[in-house]
Amino acid sequence: MSVVEEMPQVLQDFLAPELREIRGRLDAVDKRFDAVDKRFDTLDKRFDIVQGASDMRYQSLVQRLDAIENANGVRYQAVIQRLEQIQQSFAFDKRISDVEAEKTRSA
Image 1: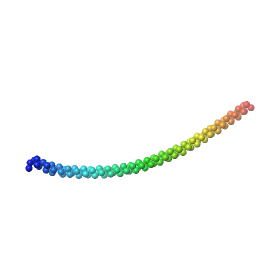
Image 2: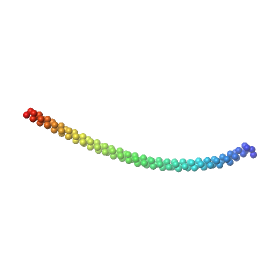
Image 3: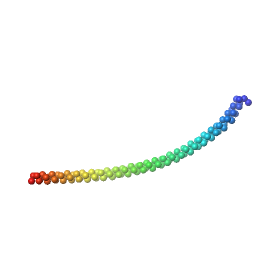
Image 4: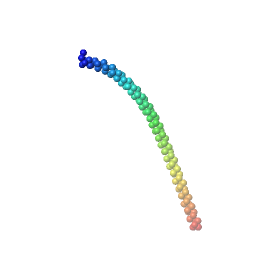
C-alpha cells in the first residue's frame, strides 16, 4: 500500500474518534446551555410577576395619593373661604368702629 492509499485510513482512524469526542463535548455544553436557558426563563417569569405586583402597588399608591390630594384640595378651599369670611367680618367691624369714631368726633 502506498502512502496515498493509507492516508484516508489514517485520517479516519485518527480524526473519527477525535470528532466523536468533540461532538460529545459539544452535546454536553449544549445541554448545559439549555439548563441555563431554562433557569433564565424561570427568572424572567419571576421578574415579570414581581414587576406586575409592584406596578399594581404603585398604581394603588398613586390612586390613594390622588384621593388625598383631592380631599386636601377641598379642605383647603373650605379653609380659604372661611378665612375670607373672617376677613370680611373684620373689615365690617372696622367700618362700624370707623363710623362710631366719626360720630363721637362730630358730637
